[in-house]
Amino acid sequence: MAKEFQFNWRPTIPPSLLQGATFDRYDDESTCLDLNANVRIDEYGFFLYWLVEGKDATVIDMGQIWEARPAGMPKDGRILFELEQRGARETIEERTIWITHGQDLVNIQSFYLVADSVDVAKTWRNGINEILKNSRIRHVCPTTHLLRYWKWLTLSVNERRKIPIKLIIKTFSSGKPEKMVQKCLNDLGLGGDKYTPARAMNISMGKKIRNFYKCSRNRRRKEREELDVDALTFDKFLKLYNKICPRTEVTELFVKLSGQKEYLTKDRLINFLNEEQRDPRLNEILFPFFDSNRVQQLIAKYETDNNYIENGKMSGESFLRFLMSDENPPVFLDRIELYQDMDQPLCHYYINSSHNTYLTGRQYGGKSSSEIYRQVLLSGCRCIELDCWDGTGDNKGEPIITHGKAMCTDVFFKDVLLQIRDTAFARSDFPVILSFENHCSKSNQHKMAKYCMEIFGEMLLSKPFDDYALEPGVPLPSPNRLRRKILIKNKRLKADIERHQLEQFLREGKLDEEDEVNETPELVGEELASPRTEGTSSTPADDDDDDDDTSDDDDPSVETSMNVNQHDVLAVPLPVSERSSRVAAKLTTSSPTSSSSSSLRSPNMVY
Image (cartoon, rainbow, N blue to C red; front, side, top):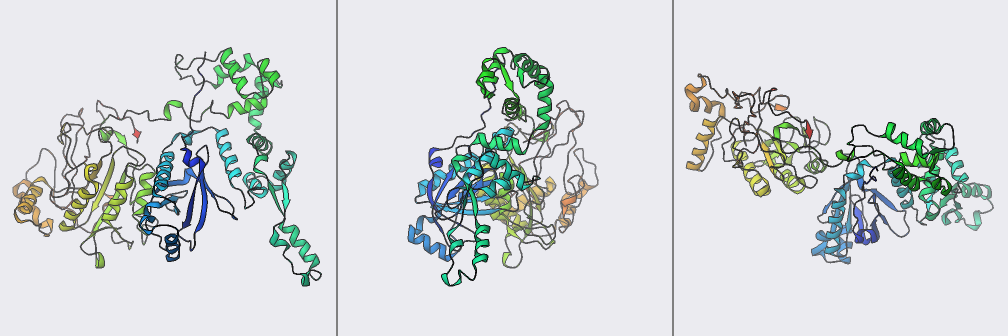
């Protein structure tokens, strides 16, 4: 007997979020508060919504929410003053929930919910972020998507807490005439009631006769049609969908399978499920073939006609309902959760990476933002880029992040690290790689290393693992081994130069800002003329060059290694600093050079 299909996509919604709570709400453009907003999350975890007396409901798709986090004080003085009148000023930041949402990484909107107590705010922040971790909801069936649309309509009520008919028409009118949608609504008894707002009747007696005809037209124009929420059940919504958007291809398939009858017999349904619908790659023991008992269960589950259920038959409408259900998922069940082997060396994986992460728009004259690092990490990116330069003007003495000399705005290096610390492992525990394009002076590189160690703390992989030495022939650690670790990837100087500068720093307590082009011949001497078995090196590139379009292999300042044994995975350590000593945090990742004939094949996986 085939096993019953089980796919639980619904997240667990805490009771406090289902019941709702009262918040004061504002956004970045607000000059006043929405007082006593009743905020809730629906039972499916689809939407966060709130109701304010006398206003239409506001519904936010949970799939478009990036995160919920604490917030600072409101920027608008009037809002701050009003909040101080309603609660203690000392706890405003802890009582505020900052929610960011948007359809993409750049066009982000924010709103703020201020709770009555710190505990309520903490419960809601944690609850929302936990719901956002549910990835199964992205792989639901068509019927569940329709359930989502239906739920959105029932929540999007007007100030009278009814569903505007124009909202239903707008939902279905894409590619369909509005008159057709209206006719289908009327056929199903969903035409709604007409309602004229009181303000449309506000006519002074002195103008009544003079504007009689004009007012009559205005009243008709302002009449609104609305529907009680209870009238739009999910079954009626499905009938409306099938009426407006008929699935003719499914109807043709049903006619073919049934032999032009109004129903499918049990035997024909068994044959269809085993011969046409079943994935032949499935294991026959884990996923047995359908038999009479299992098919009867399907009929009882999806058929609405009791007579058909008793006789083992399925109608065309029920057949469509079955095909659109979770019994026929859009992805394989074993691919919904993490199924790849994550114990291979790190260099065996494709890594979700971001280039020029700090830019929110144009590459030339664009705007840099530390906030974008949060959104990129929350979207699943595991390798992000930081272009580091010396600050100028008011920022002098601090490392900054910007797009070189492309006239883009600056952000502080330290601010970016704080954003990374807060969101690096909010969605995934797999390691985060920081790719430094380092143009900073030695003093600022020293400051960068200090910031990294202070801000990241134990999250920073500041030295190799004991069981994964950074030596030729030793493979890199696996993603599982590197869970919740931040790795730094950067160019390095030759080992002799690094050792000399480290000794100088330990001896004198300072770093020379002398150009490294002049340092290299003094330190290396005759080694430059003699071949090296591990690799080659020469003078570093000019500081002003942007290495966006160059690789480490082309840069003569990068020391490389070649392994004689092609069947071993070679780990080549990447440095912490391009022009600094090992005073910076030690190498945390590597750039392996492996032959295509390696005995360990790459599974081509993304994490």
